[in-house]
Amino acid sequence: MCLAIPSRILQIDGQMAVVDSAGQQRNISLMLMHEKVAVGDYVLIQHGQFAYERVDPERAREALALMEEIFAQGAADVRAW
Picture 1 (cartoon, rainbow, N blue to C red):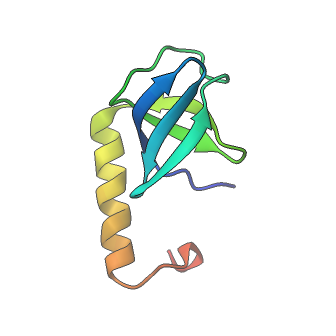
Picture 2: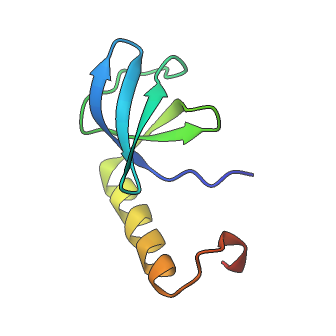
C-alpha cells in the first residue's frame, strides 16, 4: 500500500507537469489521467511519477494539514501512525 501526498500542479506542458509535492517540485506525467487537470489542481501520484487521480482541493488541504500536524509531533516514520 502506498501513501500518496496530494500534489498541486504548478505548470502543464502537454502530458507533463510540474507539481509541488510537500514543498518539493517534481516533474510528473499526466498520461494516466482520465480527466483534464489545470494549474492549481491537486493530484495523487503513484510510484514512477504518474498522476492518476485528481483530488478535491478542500480534501487535499485537509490531508496536507493532517500530515503537517503528524510530522510536527516527530512521527516522521509513517509506520508510527
